[in-house]
Image (cartoon, rainbow, N blue to C red; front, top):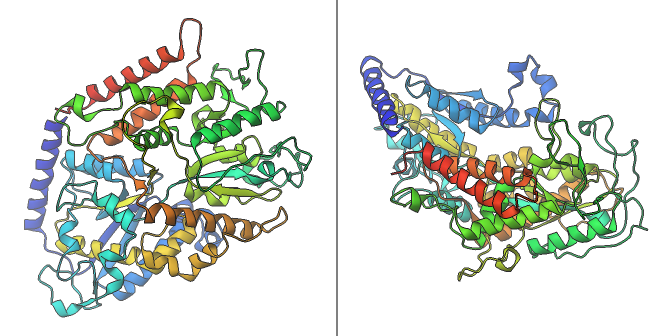
Length: 570
């Protein structure tokens, strides 16, 4: 594979040189940005109609910034291209790499950037832009700027709002840590973490407002959706949780107690095994579960990181020293997750029913229907927990302790939270003005006010410290301690939850708790394979002839071999 990648690289460089010889830069600088912002014009929807549809919030967020940038720089045109997902963007970039038909910039993750590098796709080391005397951080281009490399320095002015020091330090440090010294192939754009959302009306024994098919669920839940969790204050029990600082083991204990307290919601059979929805394929699908974790691979990866269990090593010399998750302690983590799932206490999205398109439904649907009372997922999902009829609360991310997973390594636990959210990657271009204008546009996109607007559109955290003083965000921050009742408005509920999530983000960022797994040209492959491995472990049925240990050992071996055999790691 690497030899083929080198051929792609040589072909592209040759094409780049040929084009640069026969083409002169045009007067207009065209910056093409590939993103996943739904474009109403592709769906024959008028802009006036689209403005009232939350699906297109990001489109209009970007459009306003683009319009403003183009007004300030009339020699630059920003063109966007919509893709359904980050993976679709990456696939298209790899497909187009041999033709040179690449964008100027695209949403991607650092490990994807490393894949591009290994594939010979020419992406820019933005380190050279960061310190450029004209367009670098701490500078701003005026309308006179031509973005030529030898442009007049008077066309650029100092601007502290674009300085490197303006980033949330944990975010920029994590991104920078993905690469070797004096190299940086991506820059942070929007960030999120993971938190716990839980049904406070059940926890506090206050109950909900009403239940049944006439309940409060939004139409997105479907015509037959109904709230089925406990309704009145006569509910059987209450549950105690210090949401600011708690362990995963505490969540499991609460889930186990809920299963006993509400057998009508979480029934078990004579063998104390959960009952499942019958499907034609024979797949075991949860009808209800006390604790839901949206991304099972995030649980596994974060648990390994907190307990200092080897997962991946970007500096390894061979396959054995690069791919490290196939170890006994990691298997213990997977084994415990499997045991808890077999008890009916926790499940992930792969264990939920599928919709008409064959995709697993979201855990937020089960939460809204009252089928799950605790759910861990991305902080960007705040809006799905501000529901009428009952109260939701947010908790910080859990601690994973070695005693919970029977891990006995000598390292101390190390609290960490997996940082999520896309970065921006910049591609080499025959017209160097495009590269420089792209970096200038990035500074505009991430300017404090615009970063705050992105938060408002998506609930992704701003990456600039000054954004948190913006009125948009201050209103949410000041709402975190607001008293919320069942009858409070949806907007008040969302603002209170958002404020609490912002507080946890501040705690995690200021203490450098956020991390990302080491970025290598194979780390994306490791992640996707580990996800598949965990889903296999959770779906496999334990029998007299197939123990949990058998299932885990086989899945780990198969996953490891899949990665090693599909990548030239030597």
